[in-house]
Image (cartoon, rainbow, N blue to C red):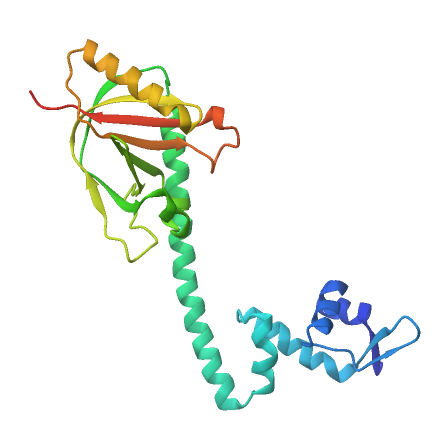
Length: 252
């Protein structure tokens, strides 16, 4: 094997992009043994490929680039084995988290497909629901820091001027944030209708559904429960958003 390798030859050996090697050089993780010529052509000594192999190994273990150089410089048998054990544990925990996210995505896909299969946005009907668990997410300012907001259908509770959010747990889902305790939407009979379009106009649909319930002589609760079916995560055009509106029927 030749003693000196160009950046292209090293990249080819490891099936890397040349830009990756240049980036490694720029941050000091893997620098060429010498540069030559007016253009500063990089030349790597053959023995350096073992260091690059170690970098690839540590990346496969999940180390961030910022920590690879320090880990390599501190490498002893005891240190390396301890680091590998810790990294293996972290990867197993990450696998569990990814599996939970995968299951949550599958549930949401099924939810959207089932709810849109026979959707009639103009309909207003009476429907009985069992108790339904959800995770309380609070006011809108709290939503975006919680993973459950992104992976479970959003449920919004309107009561007068107040509004709070939750993540609907479906098909036995347990939620991704272990710090949240589930609450339940009460079982019972509900009037169910739909709002199609931007959320800013949802009040018009509330009025339409309540007027239809009054025509049917149904007394409704003050709180309105809204479940997002088609939202910003699956549709770019707000005119196509669909929200299911549920209002509990007061017992006679």
